[in-house]
Image 1 (spheres, rainbow, N blue to C red):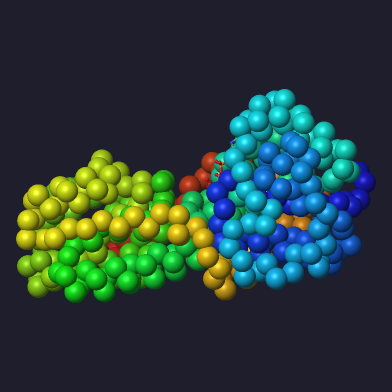
Image 2 (cartoon, rainbow, N blue to C red):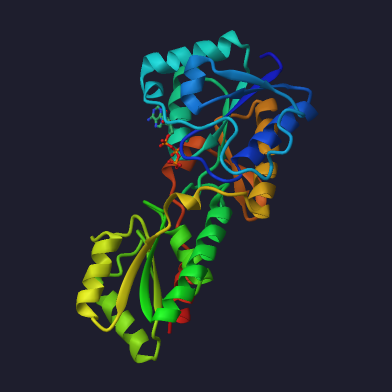
Amino acid sequence: MREVRKIAVMTSGGDSPGMNAAIRSVVRSCAYYGKECVGVYRGYQGLIEGDFISLNARNIKNIINKGGTILKSARSKEFRTEEGRKKAFDQLAADDIDGLVVIGGDGSFTGAVVFNEEYNFPIVGIPGTIDNDIYGTSHTIGYDTALNTAVEAIDKIRDTASSHNRLFFVEVMGRDAGFIALNAGVGAGAEEILIPELNLGLDRLLESLKKSRDAGKSSSIVVVAEGDKIGKNVFELADYVEENLPEYEVRVSVLGHMQRGGSPSCFDRVLASRLGVKAVELLIERQTNLMVGLINNEVGSTSLEKAIKGQNIINKELLKVSDIMST
Ligand code: ATP
């Protein structure tokens, strides 16, 4: 087996703050170990089209603090087809690339596993998604920044909620995972938190809000994850509560895409730097089909297959804390 000489890096799926810091880390690690580095634009679609750029330690300067991704991200339908993946392999072979670092979420890693099964091409994944829904790492890159953005927004909403005695439903991102909702809810002092992992039920929600009102609270914040399983969207939920608790003036705020953007937090920058180094080291050592991650605050790795099949479990102790804090 020949020595690894050239490594490609790309960002795929939804963007997240800290992806640039991860690209920078991969490029600088390649330079440190004397390897060539190639950036692939627009994820798997750019791979299929051979949309590559040669990267060195200097042309990725001043990006550690930037949100989004300088390599752009995309969702590629073509990569889901055998023909698309064949084109991608041919582009990698034509450019003499020995290994690929994929920065993305579980969809991107599923694509990587399929590609590897067909072509046995060495890939290491770096978890970059704000949802924190990937097994094999306590934190994904972008999650901490998104949390801080959500807390800052909820703090501002609380100012207006308390000035007008209002009940605010604040929807945060998280289609399948309630990590942002639970942590931002506890961090911002929400009265109630609705997450996809737990179906609180409408009755309990009303009961809890009545309890808050009876305890003398004149304004309240309910944090709702996008994928909450209560069966109503956040606007229907607000209407339902307003009908049943007419004394409350109810408002809805959907934080939306602002949670994806912005300058990455220090935590995300450090995490991205650590994971980028590890990803390059693993490829050089020919240890592949792995995802790097933070496990008990140490950098480690998990097979890509496990990372996409496993589930990050919501922290029960934190659920209890959130319950106690809302009394
Ligand atoms: P996020 O968590 O932010 O949504 P993601 O990485 O999960 O990010 P996806 O859109 O699910 O984002 O996946 C990114 C890309 O990975 C897809 O556009 C597609 O090109 C590729 N991909 C996903 N699943 C498969 C699959 N089963 N086979 C081949 N390619 C896939």
